[in-house]
Image (cartoon, rainbow, N blue to C red; front, side, top):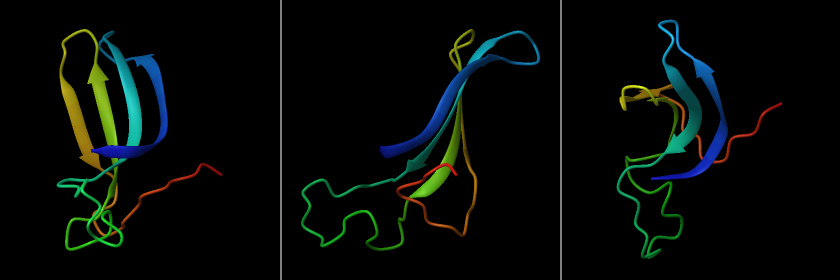
Length: 78
């Protein structure tokens, strides 16, 4: 689940494929019942800034965490 995205844009990959690059804060196993005081920061499963690459030509999707030791939920661009 991703509640907050940083940015996204469309471009050509080195091989000519049409791709979309997207950055967002991914959260696995979100408690959407909102029984926890802060469901996004409970337990060991904290949100991570993640890079997504959607290949529009092949349909392939890549997800790469940007920082393993940093929890990010509401990113801003300076």
